[in-house]
Amino acid sequence: MIAILTSLILTIVALLMASLSIGDVPLSWRDITAALLHTGYAPQTETIVLDLRLPRALLALLVGMGLGAAGALVQTVMRNPLAEPGILGINAGAALFVTVLIVAFPAVSIAFLPWAGFAGASATAALVYALSWRQGTSSLRVILIGIGVGSVVGAGTTVLMAFGDIRYVQRAMIWLAGSVHDGDWHRVRTLLLWIAPPLALACMFWRELDLIRLGDQTARALGQRVEHARGMAIVLCTLIAGAVVAFAGLIGFVGLVAPHIARFIAGPGHSRLLPVAALTGGVLVMAADLLGRTIVAPAQLPAGLVAALIGAPFFGWLLWRRRHVPA
Amino acid sequence: MSRPDAERPPDLTASNLTIAYGNEIIVDDLALSIPGQAFTALIGPNGSGKSTILRALAGLLNVGNGAVMLDGQSIARLGVKDLARRIGMLAQGPVPPEGLTVLDLVKQGRYPHRSLFGRWRREDDDACEEALHLTNMEELRNRALESLSGGQRQRAWIAMALAQETPILLLDEPTTFLDLAHQIEVMELIADLVDRRGKTIVAVLHDLNQAARYADYMVMLKAGSILAKGDPNEVMTASMIERVFGVVGNIVPDPVTGTPLCIPLAPRRDRARNRTGNMLRSDNSGGHLT
Image (cartoon, rainbow over all chains, first blue to last red; front, side):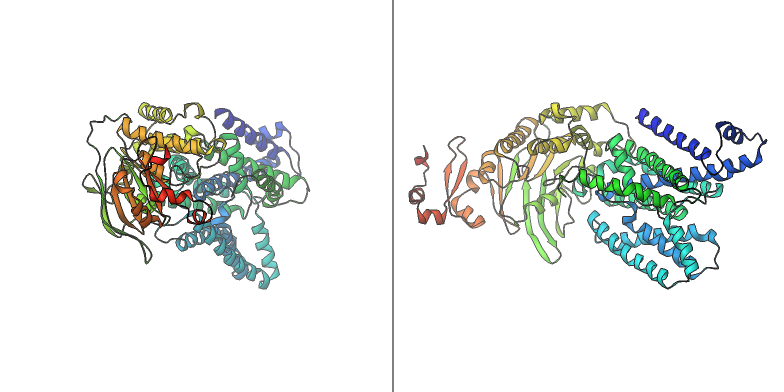
């Protein structure tokens, strides 16, 4: 386990160094060290490193960690390896609220966008959970209702896109594409404070998560309050994924793929799975962002797009590998 | 696990039990007392409410009317964890999560004995070891569940329930989907747990003859009501089989164990070409089998 964590952290450090050095203005190790140490002899380099590249890379790391952990949570609770946080309607809800804010109320400051996104994510997740409640709920019902509510909410977003002012619609589209390009220290700090407590809580409750994945009946017969455990996991997942969506827009596939990679390297136990899934997600989004801003430089591809480009083939491979597993 | 046989046997009783799904009444005013430290088999046709009754006994259902009492206390009042230390239940055909090993699964059985953040203790290890030993799964402990045969997988689930160390164990169709050798293996294990460990076991079974062979107490159900209960010798009669299953059969003593053995008469083949069927029907002594 220590070896796994160490190699993941080393990968993250390597990606971080690469993110700091690669760009329109290539920087050497010496430039970076000097900037990080605040020597003050090259203010321009310091601005590039400290105000642009470092917060952006850290935001990518946090976003990825949130998506990886939230994905692991939702796959466990839904007992479905193809689930991702979006299944709870989180993405669709955030997209709708943000689009409404941008297209219908263009005068409102963009500082409210994260709040709108988070509110949309939480409201939709709560709606999905409430609609699937019938003297207790079941994973399958949550999934089906999540898909239904997601479509309806998505249709609302499409209507706004179709009839809104084209300039505003384009702004909304950029937000929806999912990106960490506007990472600054304020965002990094806020997101960190936002997702650290639910992440820590999720890791502490690994035992409940290990048990609930055995199925409602078995978990209940072993003495678990299944509804409590499921409700808690869904709340934690909504907090984490909602915050991530609020700050970075829609970044798909990471929440789906990171838990699978984590399960592959760390096994199915949640005491190991959750931290490894979080770090794996961090690696994926950092790499996606780095790739996105270098391969077609000076143009920048949003991290969400790159993640989808990498994630889609992996998704195919995943299905192919499971072709003999009866559904 | 090694509960001394002298310990007072648990008393699990259902009285005036009525269970409905929506408006459909599944179990109607049922009274059943499970004999302690014995093997009880629930028998009945599909849809007779066997599994529902088992789930109610395990406290997994909200019962409409009546109550299930454990040692004089309503199980609805017991905490979920407290109940899980006293009654273990294995659902029918549970699906294991991918990648889980036998030991991972068995360790889950210790959940009700641990506090929220309590450490893994020596006695937890001992209980898992004993459960693996009893089910003969020691060699397979590190194998992934999906790589096991159906019989081995069933034994792994039983091992998990044994690690729970409950005096009462409820099993929902533990032998369904298993081949004959594995069915016998599971039945032997159940009988062993009752005889040597003093467990109280209730199982839903489909094979009448296996049930008669191994069970100490047999409960015949039809449409949510008990038609007969007691020693298999008394319960398994030709008229009862016909009433419960609508099958005409002969009851003969099992040539190996002497327990009742049901031989259904196959009406169509009987008429068409099997004249020996008439012989069977006229002679109920079973002597012709030797």
